[in-house]
Length: 288
Length: 332
Ligand SMILES: Nc1ncnc2c1ncn2[C@@H]1O[C@H](COP(=O)(O)OP(=O)(O)OP(=O)(O)O)[C@@H](O)[C@H]1O
Ligand SMILES: [Mg+2]
Image 1 (cartoon, each protein chain N blue to C red):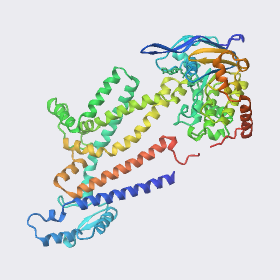
Image 2: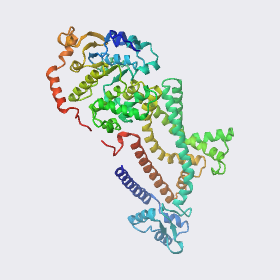
Image 3: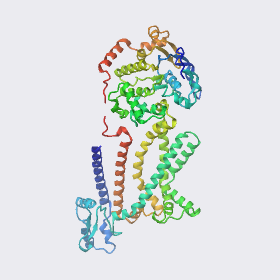
């Protein structure tokens, strides 16, 4: 799968529809979505709660809840994902497309050390890897997300980390495999405002360093303005507006987008404030 | 960890002490005068007084309780002179009806009870958890419904009904199993197994049904957890997602409940042993109740309390090793 053509987008979604069968017929929660993500690009998906953002990302991962019907085309790096069998999709998940979920506490298994959970993907996608190597990979991944004392922290359990640190662990999980695409579904919603900025910086940094494409899902335009260069705005499963992030910020075409923008108070000063706060604390977020 | 252990052991000692006090009070207050019982029909008030003095029953309550308590740890004697009866530690009392120390009576019957209880526990855990797993995997399909139907039946049949009907069916009508009679494991393992098979089934069936439903519910619920989704998002094989991320969290609470239920087995054992004529602690208790043999009833009660408390303690310790969130002494 070494398509060299850089013209071709990393991800090309056409007519993506997700529906749930109900007594009153199928209800579509994602309606014929079209969008592209360039290689190394960062796409923001915004929209109010229930607009179908999570379903879009789960559709790409092939992890839709039971009963959901998916139609349309999802072309990833030249491969049509909707035609893959489950076994083939497993090989893509975690290895080439990785996902960061909203609530880091419930998304981590309380019974295993973070090291085990970070190296899990590595162990299962690479053959002939020793536990030692996997552990080293886990420690490296933790260092890359700036968790201090990684060689010691690798043996700790999720409950021994603070919220922001847990989300770093989640991000470290995606890094062990060097994925081409990282999907982050509301990665900062469950976190304190100061910690939010740090996590966003981290995502931006990883994208810069690895060249991975990034899909950042959020209902908070302030969040997305930090990282994304392209935006799509969703409402009730429909794509309302899409374009360069800057353009949408300065000149939104739709009332709905304007409404979302208005919901963001003083984006610039607030982010500026957060930025200073983040710099001051550095990654010194309490190392519990 | 050491401190935790010490704390737990101290707590356990306190609970056991309180159990002793309460049990003793109950039997002290409620029991008919043992001296009258021992004295028999042709009895004079003087004879009764003599017996009371012999047994220390004329002493105040706390003094009697103290003698009882020291008897537990150091042993004690009953009566004086030629009638002196020695009761070695741990002395749970002396049955004048059977002329035997209670501890000895219990110890004689404990192996049978332990065999019944442990066998039943193994059976119910194996049957319950595996049926629950199958049910969860086949959620909503025929197999699931069939198992659910079985569990409803299992939970609603009383022990003695099941015991008697099984015995009638398998032994009397079909002749598949020999009529139970005491055999040591070493003498004839097959007969030994055949003897215990029915008690095991009878004693475990209710709990197995409960555990089936518990396992099913836990597994189905755990599969909805976000961390299971995370595991799938990593591209793990479904088998691995199941084993590692669904099974362990789903089965952990079952370990806890199992420890408590196991201690509670004695109650069920009472009926089962009686039905199958097995000479275990349960039967001893039942017989003593019929004969109104106070010291024995009290001894069995204390033993049961002891088992429950120790059982809970073991579960606590087990839990701290299984669930990292309650693990103590780990760096935080
Ligand atoms: N299992 C399901 N069965 C039926 N409908 C569902 C199911 N899961 C989600 N939905 C519906 O799909 C719609 C889109 O949900 P989705 O989770 O994608 O929203 P979202 O944009 O991510 O919202 P949020 O910001 O709250 O996360 C919602 O209206 C939701 O009610
Ligand atoms: Mg969502």
